[in-house]
Length: 510
Image 1: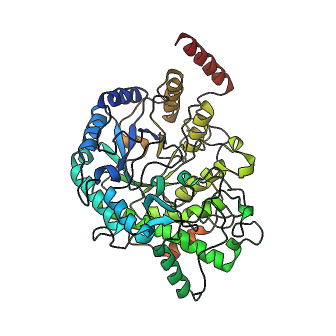
Image 2: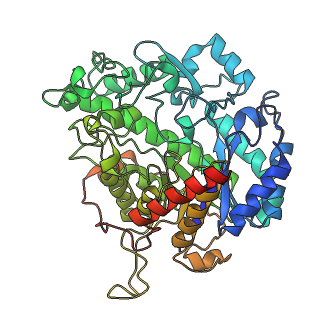
Image 3: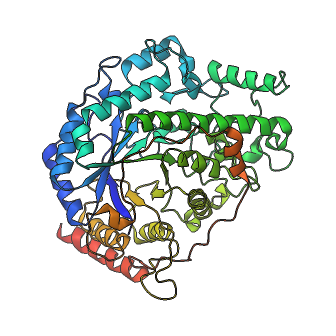
């Protein structure tokens, strides 16, 4: 079986650090628990906890929330959310900014934020260019993240010791994902725009110039031909399929540098998380974004602007998985597990099914656990069936030729997100079936060991891996085979017709 979790509403703890409607939350959790859900995932917002001032942490609302979860017998995945909420797909107009005192540093020095080639600043999270800059009342960005996680451990020790908290997902960028904020809706991005490189703040620009000079090319500059945020690849000189800059020596050098900086950032923050939670019975995790549009274009333009240097002859995700492996096997959590190729606009050259297969295979090949979640909220049977297929790409294997053989499967599936719409009668009826199928039609089992995922005290990260060793993983390898359909279907066309009838009856009789 795989663990089945649901994410909570984004603003269950508000910007003012208050818990929203504990009574309603309890009722929602009881319904989830009755449906067989194992746990919930919740964002722990930096802007809410450390909003009063530097190193002034207020955990009261989250302690109240965790007690509610514990009282209902569910497990908890906590996200260390070092980004702002608002401006991403699915944020639902919720706004939780970075701490005010951090934004004040940014007002005096806007280059602490990611910057596009046109000079647009993104205040969702800090640029990785300031990871080692002591600009924040004497602390670097890495120290800010480390101190926050240490305080979380100190103030949540009872919940960690009791086994309530089983995963710590470490925020590594926008939307908590290990990527650059290349496609922000706040700057006018619309699907399937290629996005823009986000390395034009003075700190990252200086880092690139130093790297280019060291490589013997002091004249090389950051790209100036990568287009606008909503361009197609062929609108640009950089991403053009034939003779694009990305194919040149200078283009390859830039893309290697850009993607390496991202992996190094993730490696360093995860190392701090490992130290903060050392000895706790938890797994660390990091989220990688499912940038599925333009996957079938030779340049993979949208992936490149996000920091994933992934091409037909170069695997951009295996080095990330290899990096995660050194942190006592941190989990690779991947998105867009619900998406099918046939549902995507043809002009976007999208291939979410192949992307999911590539990334999950990279994780399994590197020996790390993988998890997945849906990118967009949906409640239809086709989306659930796709998630079930990706969770167990070769079936449950309870009987038949494959019985007893080792089967690849994800460690956990998280469904976005808990809402009144999910809990509506017909939607929730289908969701209950989905949870049952995710548990392979077996009864609820609270023992994590039975999931093939025993929790042990977190051990210290292995020694830092040379970048050359990480980049060896870029050698492409075929994805593992996935079955065409899940063997744990929640139903197809006939079931959807029944759903439609039941929806109409519910509407008529209110």
